[in-house]
Image (cartoon, rainbow, N blue to C red):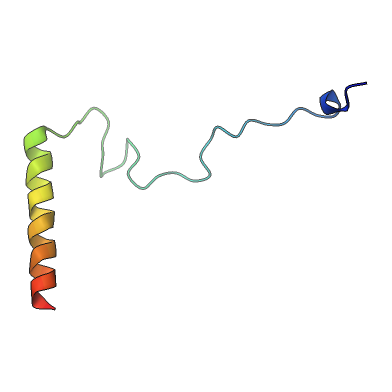
Length: 58
């Protein structure tokens, strides 16, 4: 007898435990909007400048 096949079937675990803060459909990332490469580079450069200024101040 195959005891592994007895009992109730296990439910799938393919769903996340919580919703992501940057999931599509939120104000941060609305549906149908994809960031262009220029926007991405500008955002990355601004973040690098802010980090550089922060480390310079300390």
